[in-house]
Length: 281
Image (tube, rainbow, N blue to C red; front, top):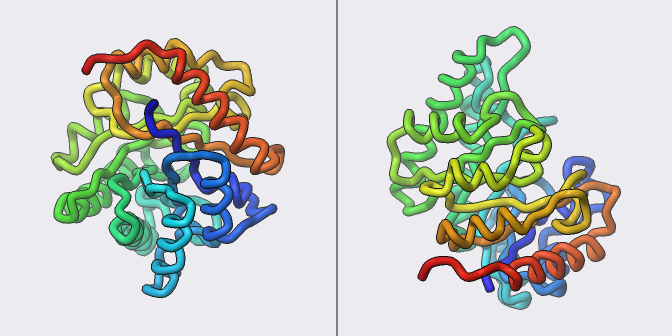
């Protein structure tokens, strides 16, 4: 059985933040619901990089050990309030985005997480798309170079439901081609594919040679299997492709009870994965 993980956004109702749990309590709940891995949301009150003092790292490590959870990945927090945009026309904001991503690398190192997700940001209404793309690409090149020295992987995500820059698998592959760094790979989130009316299975076909991570959510950010999408074709295709990363659930919102949603997501996904034919050795 592949590792099944859960993003901590569920325990803060991201992006509304109520109801909210500390990261230590979120870790306890994720472990109690039977997950193998956890994805740390790099936002307050969870794994916000500036709060990661030595004593806090030790406390969180203790919570992870007690829950027998490995950290699969770190998910940055962009947008709203202090969430910086690496594509911004404002140089100071791009600098802040760079610092946020370098902080995410620090968090990944602190908890032995191999992957940091790259969310590319968005272009302003009066900003040319290609100018925004060039800004974002420059910040990514810098962060990817640093990730390479730390032997960490940056997983480029397409997020059309939330932003307007990296929208499609072709955008992800363009960025992968333009930024020459061994630290780069790609991921996909089923929710974003569904939001575009696209097929998650097609994303696997397009990205499989570079696929290092994934997020799973059903329609309306429901637990996989609780919405309208059929996951079986995609899961079969992932097995055929030899994907060996974590199957990380990313669900959130105040329409969900955190523990009920966490339990349903793990149970549903485990049942789906049990039914998948094994891929190549």
